[in-house]
Length: 265
Image: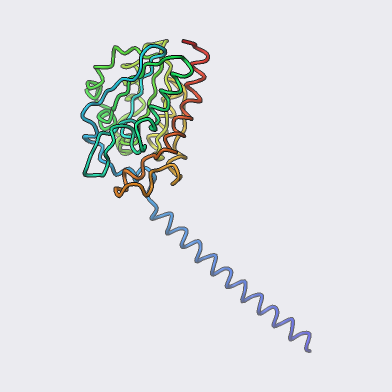
């Protein structure tokens, strides 16, 4: 009788623990669901206005060696803006000019080749109107640069909904065909630092036609890659810090250096 009572008590205890475990699991699932529903897409971290980021949208570095054209946005070049607490005139949010990905790549290229000529272009206007051929007008000044290599570092300011209205693939095609030399220029395209599924998908498609692809989206998922805590403006702080810039440069360099080795200057 005692044994039967013990078994009954044990079963009751196990059943109770099982119910509690199920309740905790249900509560966890509910919290996870709520978290996933309220978590913003990575691209929404970029709250820095896309307009009026620079006064001069083109600059040059070095001379001789391979000619490299970099077309980018605020991660490539952003002028001073007291309203958001940004005082630099280089890639946001590196702590110094020489620590942004552009200058890191320039130093690596110059060291490997003994010289390098970089043309750096802020093309935020194109991002906001990639479907309009007139968006290429500000790039007319660099059309004659005749690059050996082009680095496409754009996408974060493209509104995802516009990719449903217009063909980003066609827009990228027009841009690259406008700036490169057919059969000569080697192109490298990167995905967005903050994941942007619709835009990234079109960049993938474009890379298959025009050149090599470099993935960056996972970097934007890591707090350590950003300038977190260094700026009050959350949009500036969400940009790549020094570590993020080094990783961007290193990933692009893995492709660019291979091109340079295979095509020595």
